[in-house]
Length: 205
Image 1 (cartoon, rainbow, N blue to C red):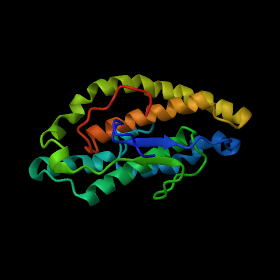
Image 2: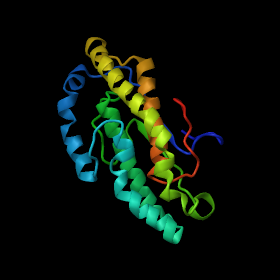
Image 3: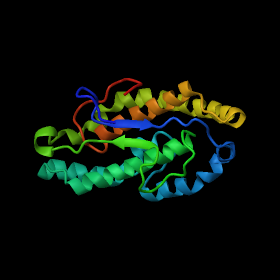
Image 4: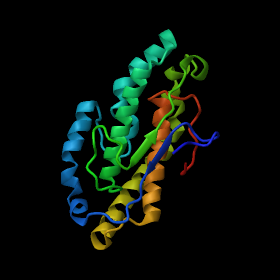
């Protein structure tokens, strides 16, 4: 999953499954309830793709802003904590949108792969930009609002497809993964604050 030199500094992918369990897919809306409660405890107030932007990253967002603005530092242990939270949310979101059958682990990577390079705050991150990144990302929020709605529609179509065939149509699968990646790119920029590079407007790596 190593990114190319010109790629955005976040790598995300989900292994495409050959088959999916029809029973766990059919009752996914029940199986996901404990995960929704977990996300609520972590600070998520909504469930769906948007949680990747406004979910438990809020726990680390404000302290990270303070660290960067006041000290121009981003401690590795604090970054690792924020990254672990986003990885957990990515696994839960992938499970909710039927991309995988494995019940999300709180620590193992499983089949949902997410990597964000650790930034060197002094040369790599602007000291004052964290104060306005959330605002600069507004155009992405608008586009992602419609893409997220489309993702819900795709997930419903995929739900029926899996119940009848046991398979997630690959073109639909890739669309959902690409929308999740776009959300994660914005989350890394505006909330994890791990890069000053503006996220690309694209459905792809």
